[in-house]
Amino acid sequence: MRIARAFNALALIVAAVMPFILPEAYLYILGLAYIFAIMVISWDLMVGYTGQVNLGHTTFVGLGAYVAAILQTPIRAGLSLHPALAIITGGVVAAGVGLSIGIITLRLRGYYFSLVTAILPLVFMQTVFIWRELFGGEEGFAIENTMLTTTVEKYYFSLAVLVVSLVVMKKVVDSRIGLRFMALRDSEELAESLGINATKYKVLAFALSSFFAGIAGAMVVNYRVTVSPELYGVPLMLLIILSAVLGGLGTLYGPLAGAIVIYLAKNWWLGQIIRTLSLPINDDIVLYALLIAVGILMPEGLYHKVKVNKQK
Image (tube, rainbow, N blue to C red; front, side):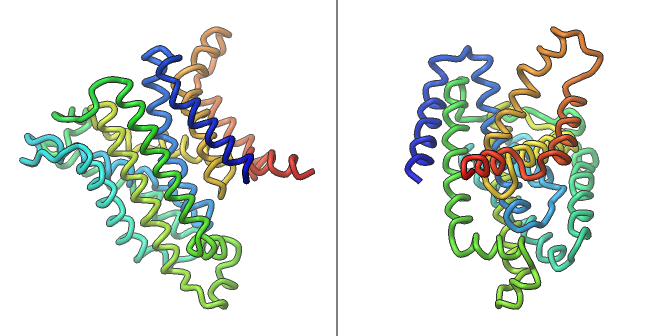
């Protein structure tokens, strides 16, 4: 426990001094990686701890993003909320939608829940094209007010939100609620025989996961100062899955590390390596191949692998 706390403190210190080390362009990418990490660990909260596979996590990322963007752009809906309030509202709306969908779909068992959630991003993405006057259509739109002006401010804000989100989710999974989540993951029938209301706790996990996904989406908008339909997209969902699986489901810390590594690979060094070696592939092919390889060779993820090796 002491070693873990010391490592966490060291990691936080290293992250805090990055603005004094990295050029501004790389610092900007790293800040976005922290926001992406919130998406990944919030997905792990649902999938890794309850065993319910949500293939539509980007639905709530997109919802949080568009709600915050509209509330911060008077020309869209006649409102101009403070960015912090808009971000929280984006998370609350995403959680409310997640709660509503969860109450209906989480009574289903097996792959039915996964099928329903897989369709959700496609459904919500269509609203962007149908009501283009409000949502901006294919190109999206830029927000008109944000409290973040410099890259350093954006970086520290994304780091702070990541730390708070991680602490809250860690408190949840370490509590009695978390124990019930894991009981459902290990055996839903056995958990119900012990008096655990399976639907109640699955819906709770789904709402919490949706809330943090919405926060992450709203953070992206304030970080990039634009919103677009790509936040609902399948490529983003695949990156989330890859990061969580690579790090190790049901750990939070594993998906956190996996998210930062994968995002930086996707948006920083992997493309440079491919171009340097003149390989006839792109970064997506490499990442998707990595997802398949990890699923086959190391389905428990890196975090579990390292932990087992230490115990030996």
